[in-house]
Image 1: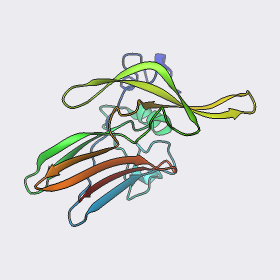
Image 2 (image 1 turned 90 degrees about the horizontal axis):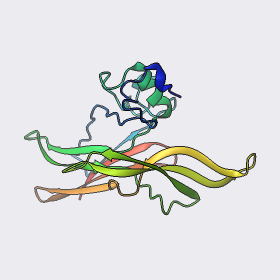
Image 3 (image 1 turned 135 degrees about the vertical axis):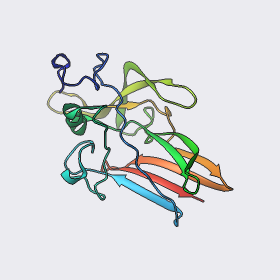
Image 4 (image 1 turned 90 degrees about the vertical axis):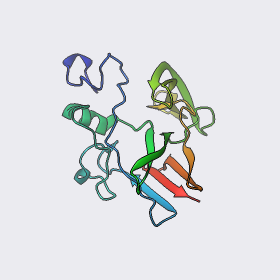
Length: 201
């Protein structure tokens, strides 16, 4: 893991927070033109979190979470690829005829720390400031911990994966535009792929 004292991660660990800081990726586009639903999955067979070049093992036409090198240097991007995760998405709906934004919001995959079968979620005691509309809000961070017992030390198996408390953001958002209702959804499959869906009904 990163050594805070070496100065190799000036953006990710600015402020001395051991869990790191949120680093945004460049945006990507889902187009609903000509179809009622559009899905896009982002998955890697090489990295824990697909933030490096799509030719390095990321499927789905080379899609990955492309990060501005001004916001995260090479060492930080490598650390994110190995240990990072996507906490939430900011979405914006743009009318292709006018190129004007018509709706926006934040979503994250659903994870309820109170009702996940076979797991016990442990509050880290840390709160983080997350963006929101119209103003930032504070959210607690939890560790994901399995209730299965490790036979070698008779303690619960812990992945130490961090996630935001339930309903920091919704996992499905809706908006109306020109008489049509649209849905935006984020979910993570058991195979650890991230799926983003834009649909209209």
